[in-house]
Image 1 (tube, rainbow, N blue to C red):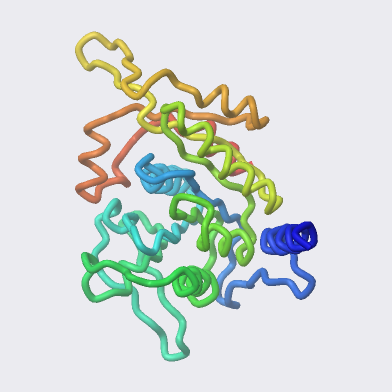
Image 2: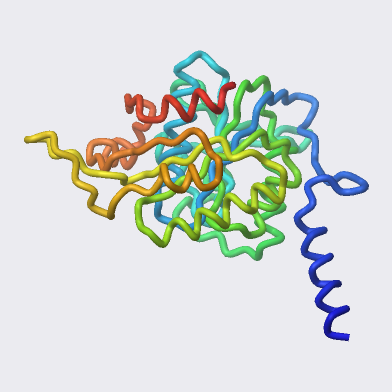
Length: 275
């Protein structure tokens, strides 16, 4: 009896992770949206700078002349609008669609903070409601003509990443991590989830990888020796990047000036994204 129950549970879990269901649960965007590539930015844990990496990649793609968009799918911890200095609100149309907000450089953006009256108020919703909101960001927002959309997802392998993977045509993901040894186990969960959903991992970004002394130029690995190359090798991931601890970058993000950051640290990752 217990063996049968175990088998049933396993079958239920396997079915939950299927990306292509018999009736198909992948949703199409509206007729006024044409999005050619969707890239998810994920992390196994919070506090590793996932939103920063999402913002940087979006800005870098935009500077290459691509029509870019960023979807802030981290509903309970939205930070993308602040990085871009956006505080105005998105608005709806007469036929119940949503017009995304545009940044100074023309990046289209959607976040729950662009819809609520007070962006400092917490979003206290249960998982299915949060997942439903993310789904509506895909189906109900008039994105227009977009070359590449970056989706900033909440950490972990819960409702929102599963919703994004199952309902949106995700072309690949970028995993963001930090140098601590514990992270290797956490990263493996994100990578394995992507594998179960048949979504390729395009690269790994190690944020806070080191601090470069402005006086002598020596690099100090404050959070421990870098492990990103070893992790990438273990999972057959070819593209990696190391972002330093940079107080100037932090100040620019806090000041809503992420579009002014200039760095080549993510060039290889972006090249992999745009292949």
